[in-house]
Length: 547
Image 1 (spheres, rainbow, N blue to C red):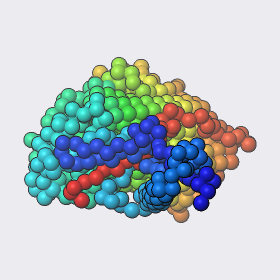
Image 2: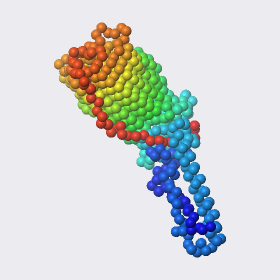
Image 3: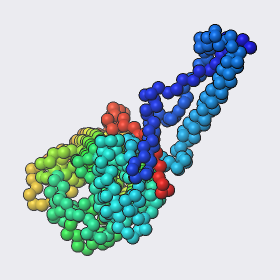
Image 4: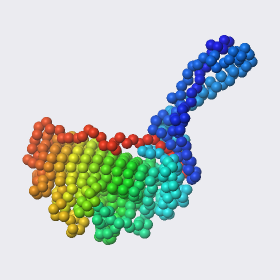
């Protein structure tokens, strides 16, 4: 055999930079967490390459003259070729299985989830004495676990895994660079023992509690002044067990404002996703004074007559994305807020750069999306699209009043489908609740540049009820390409417009005279994206010993 003509495949491994992207880290809680980077084919050998090389550059003439050494080298080379070919095939098969990870609940014991940031350390609630029997209080277990994991804030962050079971708990506080992950069969049960709900001060932009003067019960899951917080799972459940709270509220027995399920204050870089929230005592999800927020894949369920069980309430927040949510509520599905009368005016923190898309809402007594009524810090740059409303009171409702001050402006809505509605369009300038008697009678809200387009509705009682403020009308209202099918017994007046100004185009039934027809007009919907829309989630894995 003329060995000088043999071509040998030479295998090149990953560079050290590529190899450093794969990390398997085990915390001292014996719960390993696998980080997978954003490359969907990772870990992979497919960037490696078999390159033919003539081995005459590698073999000396001395070797060619020694048949025994030559034979030994042939055997070694054949074994090396076989090894790397096998590795190549295994790598392809591994990639194939890894690419299919989203079609299975877990891969080789690893639970997948999507997050903006993966974590380097992890532990299970069981490691800290968690008991999922639905009876034992886990308040201390949660707080002890989070306090322990907070040491990793500057070392890659941490994850607390809640395995299958029903975990009774009172309120607990989160930490920065932290993920709370609920298994699909995990349920957090909010305790009905009021001693496990500390009382905290009223929100500074509200001046008092919503149910009563003075303080408020802290939320079930709470955090303030945090960075990089994720609350997620494989559709695990948080049950507020709100019935007892609703009964007390209806009887006028609440001396302290009811708790919410989740509230994060003065925080940034927040993700809340892939969870089911049920039976909240009051509001479900309340980010406030915060920025860079993603709320995604959330299901919220409450009896449609339960009091004040708003779904998602972004409040004095900037750069927020709400998408792919399903909400059944006793109040507004989404309520955009920014403070109450003189307290909100003084705090002066608006809600702005808000995106709402692919929302399904059922709310027979309230709005799909409400702007206000507590809007005294201002609401600006809101975009809502691809919304389905079923058996709801109104589509997008603007709620304000004299005394609120501030503004609601630059609102853009499109591709809204509605089935069985009381109103499609509703604006109210006389929503008269106030925190106390110190509100400013000269604080007049400005409502302008409100755009609706590409909407269709059926079985509607009244097309529009637009009521501005005398001598201070709502202006810049635009409605285009809207078809409204009226119910068999509609209101006597299909449209009712007072103290409003704007235009309409291609709207059926034809709007009131305050919205004259301007043929061929298409209401605005900006194409430029907000920064939060560019934020991507990646694939992460968590391996649990308690599956």
